[in-house]
Image 1 (tube, rainbow over the protein chains, first blue to last red):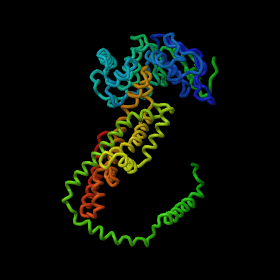
Image 2: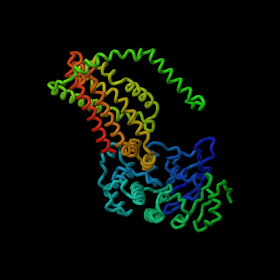
Image 3: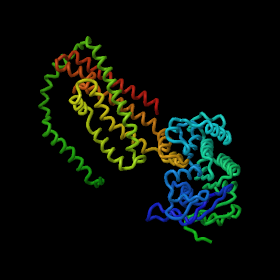
Image 4: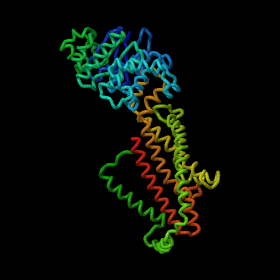
Length: 251
Length: 253
């Protein structure tokens, strides 16, 4: 479960807040699409969930545990429960596909073991299995940079699953991919969300794709959540409101 | 510095060049009529020919020593600079340690190799050892800065991805920065090796070993025929360094 209560974040005192009292609750097995224009606060919302961004007020809870005020080992323990995938994949280009997936387990490895490459046999087996699951069997030894965009995002998803997360966050995970590839990636994420009862939140600017895979939509505009409800009820008028350049007023 | 108004930039440049010319002539006493000293040049060049090749085995050994000095100097500098680079990179280490270390490194590299060599020759003895130490001292400062700046330029994306797995800072740096930085780090290091071969070739002039030692000795004893071979040896070394550097950088990039 992922929960936001009145979360506010301001990057600079003289700027309007990136998040302005955002509240949201997402349950396991749900796949939620964050809709909204660039700069609306979608990335900030996502990054608040694992402490990459610290809100100035409000509470973010992962599995009932508050992330705010955490640091050091506590924060790292929460981060292990929250996997993130990115628009630009952020793989280690010069590492093999298998090693990139294993990197998802780094939270469980002290520096000396990770640096020496002493991965446990169980983790290596798990990583291989995940690569089969995301459809990259036989690519284990290739370098990450040798793969296509869609394949890289599959590696990133396998890396995320390697964390055995409760929450899966995606910051525009298909924005760098062509529509067909993007659809297959969202299909994979939807299947994994159902199989593993993940609490999944993705920011998606392609509304058509979002409609296809996400039963629930959350509209973000000027740091505020302006819509939270079934995707089926997202009308063209509502989209226009969400994507309007002026900060909308809540209905 | 603020960019000067266009109207003043032309005159300012001319003032700088003319002022520099007049000032430099006054300071150095360099005027065309002083060129009479060229009369010695003919005698000197005539003395250099024909080259005395009997000194070749010694020159080859000197060249080998020079490459050895350059290699060891670079190696020692790298071994120390690599960990120091983590401690001086602004995105890895806080200013409480980074700032004093960056100052120390700036001091190390602001002293030229030849000056370090003079210091180490006085502190230890003539020979190859002060040469290695001199190159190491100067290059720790240079390599720490170069490598640290490579770390600072690493893209934040993979670092964030590593942090998001809930791992510690050391793993984030090792996996998020190092694989990206390593080719450039090696390329910089080999470039310094190339530079160090050139530097080591003249360190002997102040007594710090290598082929420069022969050059100095032969000059002092007016053995110009042998000096020719020394100079050819140095040219060969510099060409070798150029070629080696280009070849290695082609491989790592």
